[in-house]
Length: 163
Image 1: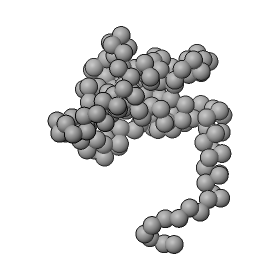
Image 2: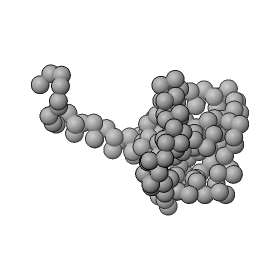
Image 3: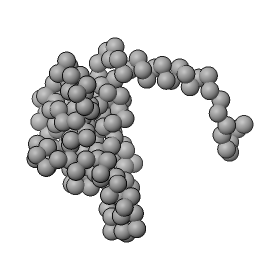
């Protein structure tokens, strides 16, 4: 089952209070667990300390994601593209007794499978800002910086607060 089909299922069962309760049970714990984010510094420290209670899953998508993984990834990381993560053969690769740290280019795609994994009982987290926070001069970081700079020229309307 792909992430997209998961969310279609969620939408299809939006009236199912049991499913809504399961989703709420996961999401409501977000603040308690730093919204299920870890920072790159923590992962680097865990690697340096030789910790074995976590696994990094690189979920950069498609052929380009695999090429990016092959050209450089976090030490010890495994690659499973996020759109293929929920296939039974790939779920079997995920340990149920370790933290699963998801990482993508810039922190957006890794979020998609996070809640479904937690609903399935995995101790899943996302690395804040993805590989952009890990690798110096990572191309996606340049893209993010450009987006941030562009927002400085915007002045879209807001409701409430100062005008």
